[in-house]
Image 1 (spheres, protein in one colour):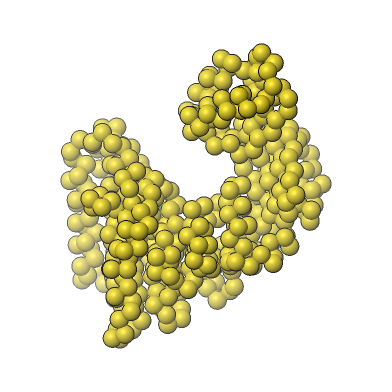
Image 2 (cartoon, rainbow, N blue to C red):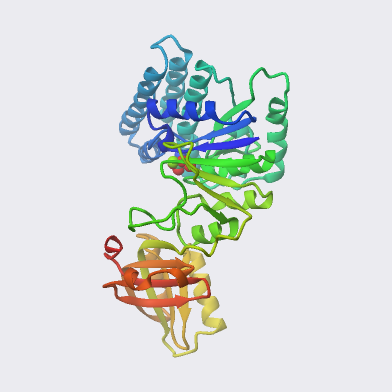
Length: 433
Ligand code: ASP
Ligand code: MG
């Protein structure tokens, strides 16, 4: 059994949906689970609806919602014979329910309202695509991920209940997939990003969470392989938008991929790899423009991990140096106070370094959290900081051309381990690499 994940860019318009149908049609004859995101930038658009609704701007919310409905209607008109298909009714009804829903004032839990509204993107994209596949002779069954991926009620960042999810998936999908009487191979179509509580409320797994959905389903069903279809040819050793002469990594281990995403590589959602690693399910990353081309594969094989250096650039960083006012050493007491201050403000440290009397940290600048942290620290510590810095991480730097990378940049901090080199440098340099 295979799991395919198609993101927003792969279903951004009618042509793209037809391409997805072709990829599915031409893939091997195994049973297939297809996980799909919202079309194009629909999630961003629905976030705006939620914000308008929540801040009492009903007219704005309605007009934004109309635009989203029209966008989906337009795609459907290009896929189906106009007005002869029940999909038009279905799109109309889905948005009608949402218009109706936002007439009532919002509840107190913003995150609950967010999940209720934003999940519509995936719900409607999968209905359109499932219907289009059926219409093109690719028989499939649509499932609501709300009944498959069972989560807690931590709306917007829901945690998966693995036992309940495994049970639900096995109860609902396995009988269909194992049914030998199917004339064609069984194909399941479902949403990425979405889950549901045991009480039946819809939840979401965090932005870009569809990769994670694919991994959850692959894990519970014991899939042979997962493929994430992207608009790039695979995993590169640097972001091609930032660096020239990037190299496609044809194969790396789960552990190395986890390291890369920890340091800020954004190609796959960080939670995706753990379930796959646990059941040794390989993850392919391939281009939906060139489905026949080999992409990258992430699996158990370490052999090539060290063969090429990888570069990760994290922009918009703040480099903060902290000095105890009483000249006490940076040891257990100060460290524990500092870490709890970071945890309390919800700031994730990207790099840290200490000496006897100072502690330096690098973290993402945040309009709300950063000033709170600085205000609290200032009471006990003297602070020095640089804003707008860039954090460069090089994995397997021994093979990298560091001189070229550093050209013209002022290093504010350097840290080296056996495999990883990190620099904090003054910003505005990433484009010049
Ligand atoms: N549609 C959601 C998002 O854009 C989930 C995903 O694409 O993975 O964040
Ligand atoms: Mg997306």
